[in-house]
Length: 70
Image (cartoon, rainbow, N blue to C red; front, side, top):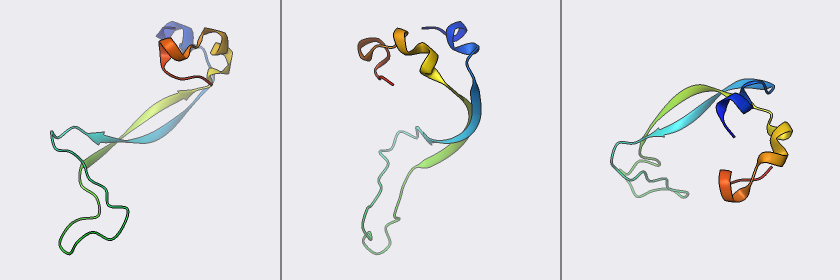
């Protein structure tokens, strides 16, 4: 599957959040952290990306090749 295969699919645009690689391991506390420690570390950025309807590609998708199935 290449970009040309997916280019003609219906799509919507959405803003997704991405973790910026700063070289430090991000930490998220799922409970109140110790005093003076932030709840979450790491730097995030957003990007507007197309999200395409992949149902037309079902016969071409493989867990072994793409790493997921619909």
